[in-house]
Image (cartoon, rainbow, N blue to C red; front, side, top):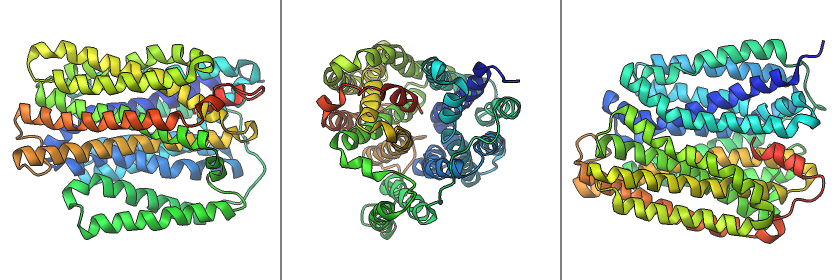
Length: 480
């Protein structure tokens, strides 16, 4: 008996909900972890960075493995591994072990991210694809919005351990339902796995993010910093060389021959870096600068994804006719919001209202930008390669998250040390000095907004219209 397609869609939506709750809830927890473990800022930031780095490295690997093996088995293994890693994170007795378990969570997230949309689209069928992707996007938006508020409640009423344990029951439920509901044996024709490509990509991304995160702690002339950058500079070109010659590459790098696809992909990295760098910086601003309770800080941070989620459907509907206007307007609003936020963020209780209004504007600007840019970038790829393009954009989103947290951590630590002499600590910093350091992160985000507007508009006119027959593929891939 064929099971109802919407039950399969529901399982995939659980994966999206758990993943986005985890991604957003941890940002608010970082100030608490800094205090609990008495750790420097660059080390604490690895709690967030380790997850997205492992996710970015695991995603293309699991995507290829799923094509050559049993997709359902890999997907269910991802749920169980994610749940187990969540439990281990909560029990971690030290910060290094917590970072290790977060990396394990990221690997599991890669197994889920590589399969969720494929299983969802196959289960829903072509006639229900649009509605199914709508529910999937809603689950993602709900997860991002719930994360900060839920994290604040857990930190205030329980302990930081519950921030990680909260996703474990969702994963167990999803694994059980997935075992019952998802059809087995979903796989395509076997293809060789590009092991050399994986062995080049993983250390290259790891070295690059390590250099960014530790740049302030190690210093620009440190042999560690120079060594990490050197490893990235050697391995990334080697990976590109390998992928051009591999019979079944991890990533279809030939898509980057299109300026439209390349520019849009860079803009995706920058836009997601802007979202999560703001989460990171404002978590410290609200908790350390305004002395908010975790509940209050979480509720205030929720305004960013709420504004983004409200505006994104409108911008997506208008993208075909007004693409360039939306891209420029979205980043212009973000640019103005970051500068205004730096101006009004004084630490006085009365400044919280303009701070919240400015954060809402920032979220709305991202909402105007992200959906049209994602869809237009995928439209720049041939319809026959929409799945490969979606995989690259998934990688761009996860890498952008890591870049955002890493850059925000480095700039915050640098500005704090210059202002206070405190090395990699926010605990003893005066509120006004900490908020001034956060303003440095906001200026960096203003620069990101300018770059995102520029790169997203490369070939923007050519990407505005979706060729016939491609729209469905784009819709299915743009929210992967």
